[in-house]
Length: 274
Image (cartoon, rainbow, N blue to C red; front, side, top):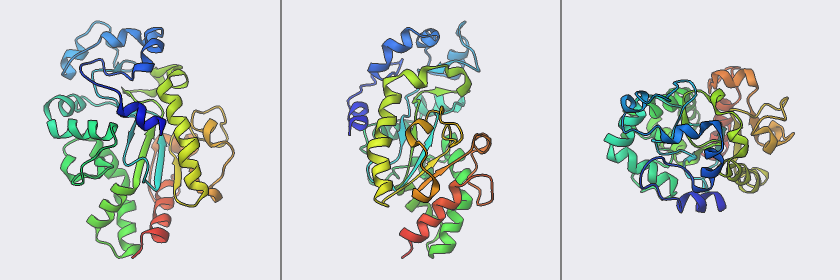
């Protein structure tokens, strides 16, 4: 798969950590100055005269174009970009185990003792990514456990092996609104869309996977980034899309705040129940 091979062949020797084909476009954009905001701590980066908390892109952090086992996942969540917290710097530069998990994920070469979707792996519960995703998916995991007879831990691990998140913009930024037109221009973004179109949606058509369009996928907004890939596909074909209003909360609650949690539980009952 071109997306996987392209990232697997990218070498991250020193910051800025940028996908090679993205460099010319970033250099010609208003975000070019962010390439020079380099540091190994949040304090170093924030001390740079060009740093803007709401708009700067953190190229000192390893990118996260995706998370999970891309080829073998059954639940694909489409979102916009990895967010940012100051703790990301400590995780990238002072936690060798976490940094190695990031690199293994980019290469799609995760060891067997780490969940492919490592933000559900208790080994990394000190990182904000674990807190974010585990908090969002706790109710979903609990319901999977109740409906399948698995223990909570087994249900969490099962989801951690079968869930993949794909970001359309792979670099850390606090606010997506500060990205401008880059998510529409970067080769890395185009590869992500191509992968979903040529691999993920084919699995959905074969009833081997479901897609949850968490952000930029509103069916009523065909101009949105993931909407351009998903087209007019509806939930009856395994596509579960959040409206723009639901995406602001990005909830996986089993209530009416979005379709993601219920879609995962229904899939688990159908496919994972012993």
